[in-house]
Every structure is written in structure tokens, then in C-alpha cells.
Image 1 (cartoon, rainbow, N blue to C red):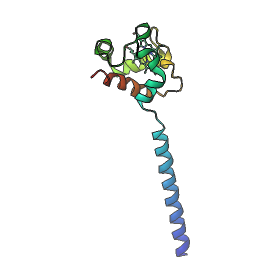
Image 2 (cartoon, rainbow, N blue to C red):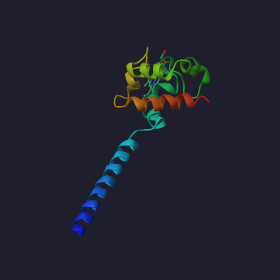
Image 3 (tube, rainbow, N blue to C red):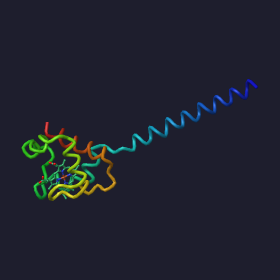
Image 4 (cartoon, rainbow, N blue to C red):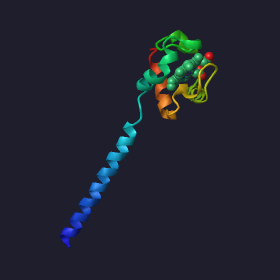
Length: 109
Ligand code: HEC
């Protein structure tokens, strides 16, 4: 009886550890803004294709930074003028897009 209880407890702990591990795996699957930038946004946002604000340029970014993050994110999701929806990263989550916008904003400091 005692041993059965011990085994059950171990099994429960094992499951809990497994659940914790898998949930942290999901969290770490989120890509960084820098990674996404250099995979997708780099095509336009380095050289300033079609008027895209260039990475690291405060002059280019200031008018955009003046908008709220919510507006920047919304425009990035739907696309704005020459920029295609989600900056062509169709599998980017909203959070990943926000990370990438934050990465570009930080690059101007
Ligand atoms: C095909 C070229 C292209 C790609 C790829 C691209 N952008 Fe853009 N982006 C633009 C252009 C052009 C603008 C300027 C739009 C304007 O005139 O307001 C812009 C503007 C923006 C703005 C400012 C929006 C605003 O409301 O002021 C953000 C934020 C942005 N891009 C994020 C991204 C992110 C994040 C990616 C990558 C996931 C990306 N872009 C990929 C062309 C691109």
C-alpha cells in the first residue's frame, strides 16, 4: 500500500515535470525580434526600399515611434502603403511582430 502510494506520487511528479518542460519549450519557440528582422524585414528595412524606415536611423524612425506600439503593430499586421501584411512573415505571431518592431525601435537609440 505504502509503495503504491509512493509510485503514484512519483508518477504525478513525473507528469508535472513533463508538463513544465513542454510548456517552457513552447515559450522558447517564440523567435526573437532580431532573428525575425534578419530573416524577413531585412529585405526592405536595411536599405529603405520604397521608403521603409531604415534600421538604426533615428530620423527615419521618429515619425513612426511617435505612433503607439498598438498602431505600429496593427499596421504591420495589415500592411501599410508599400509594406505587405506582416512584412511578408506570414507565420509570425503578433507577439513576434511586436518583438521585431521593438528591436527596430531599440536600434535607433
Ligand atoms: C517589402 C518591403 C518591406 C518588408 C519586407 C517589411 N517592411 Fe516594414 N515597411 C515597409 C515600408 C515601405 C514602410 C513605410 C510605410 C509608410 O510609408 O508608412 C514600412 C514601415 C514599417 C513600420 C512602421 C509602420 C507605421 O505605422 O508607421 C513598421 C513597424 C514595420 N514596417 C515593421 C516591419 C516588420 C516587423 C517587418 C518584418 C516582419 C517588415 N516591416 C518588413 C516595407 C517593408
